[in-house]
Structures are given as structure tokens and as C-alpha cells.
Length: 85
Length: 151
Image 1 (cartoon, rainbow over the protein chains, first blue to last red):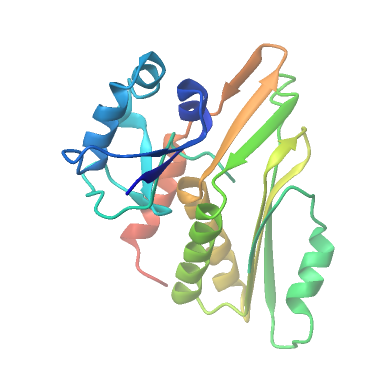
Image 2: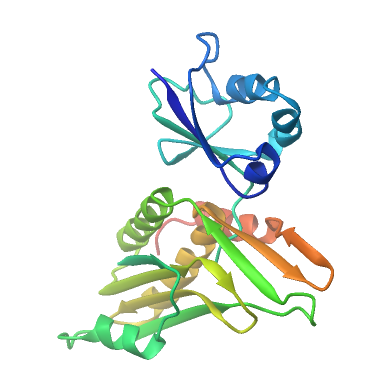
């Protein structure tokens, strides 16, 4: 089953894409592991996730920490700290 | 009530709607956030957001405010898209019997919105364009609500 990945703001600019459907490797079970795996997908992704500690994530539209389990997530988003208001 | 839209809003009309058909409201607090030109450095501000999650977060924040204070009405309205200096960005309205709940709830809503609603600002001007960085003071403003329980 593929997972929808979304990128926003400068994460999107660096990866060069807003959304994609990806078949995640079995060994990728947390957000931190997913970011480490994404970094291996080419120079754009390596650049986008270089400072992965500052990147925030959401699973199925809920904020989560980097140690959160991916489980049966349908949609995972990566973005910088929010700056609305 | 929450709304996410590209269009501008009319504060008077929104207040009238909030009060419409009720006579038990004694206090309405309105907060309006607008675009600053920062001494000419900002000519345009573009707000990106995460459709779906934005609405979910704003609803969650609104529900949290309603559980902490006795509110008779509440509106969080946030714009997205390209804005210019002096344009409206966000409107928060809170209505209650007495002013204290409305004041506190409005402040709480803005503090939470700034640290959890998935919006990102990009400013552009004569020096080029850049993503606005999250401020530590906004995070601190949200954290203080965690120390104090509902009053």
C-alpha cells in the first residue's frame, strides 16, 4: 500500500515537489527513519532534509514528533515550523 | 466557527453575524492581524497552508478555547494567498457574558494558532524573498497556557 507524502514551504521548494505517492520500505517505521530514508533519494531530498531536526511532521493531518510510529498512515506531511497568524 | 479563505473580510459584518439573534452577549473581543511593511522591506506576503489540516487544527483550537472559557460565540478566520502591506491576515472574534473570558480566549486562540495552525509566510521586497522564521516568543506565549489551567 502506498503512502501519500506532502511537502510544504521551504521543504517543498527544496524537494521540488508538493506531493507524491510512495511505497515505503518495510524497515521504515518512524518519522525519523522516514526522513533518513528520504535523504537517500537524491540531492534535492538530501538538501531538503539536511536539517531534519527543525522539520515538523504530521501523520494524517495531526502534528507528531519525530519518534512517532508511522503505522497505517495514509498521509504524511513535512514542513518548517509554522508562521501563521 | 472557523474559516480559511483567500478573500478579505469585513470585521463589522462578522461581528454582526456573531451577535445576530442573541441578546445575552455582553462582551466581544476582536483581534485583527495585518501585514506590516517593516520599513519598506516587505512589499508582498504570500501565505501557504495545508488544506484539510488547517481546518482540523483551527477546529481543535476553537474546541479547546470553548472548553476553557464560557464563550457564547467564536470565529477564527484566516486568509491565505498573496497579500500586501496593511492587508488583513487573520480575524479572531470571541463573545462572552463578561469581558474577561472573551479577552483571555482571544489571546489563547491567537497564541495557539501561531504555533500549531499549518500556515507559512513568505515575504518579498526589494531585497528578494524569504520564508519567515518561527519566533521563540510565539512558542513561549503558547507554553504559558500549559502552566495555568482554565481560569
